[in-house]
View 1: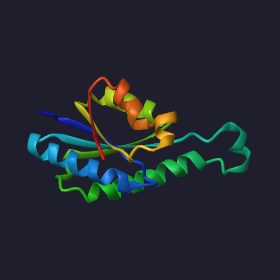
View 2: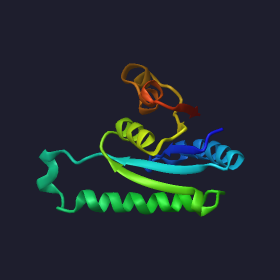
View 3: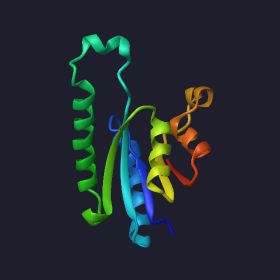
View 4: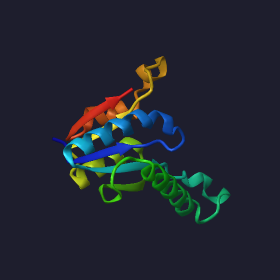
Length: 140
């Protein structure tokens, strides 16, 4: 059974992650496993750096950390079995790196219904499924 469950969350649209969170909590409850929430903030392009405060990335990371704490507090699991991390970089790259570094058994990811843009461009969920070294559960 899955003991280390990683759940990527897009803080700009937490509703997509809700079904994935529910499934992840159910898996963790049955297996006695741990749950780790992850969100990834994009790096500010260098060309924009002169237009934003010097501490922009640090402030954005702190804000994301606070939002993840709020999401984690709402989960029906003991606090010692829920953790979270905020990473900076590409979404799928950082999710895959965290899964590998933490030794995740499964990544539980929420997904939008496919659209034409998704078929042509691809999505983060698709890339995570293709390149993960552990199991991936995609929840719609």
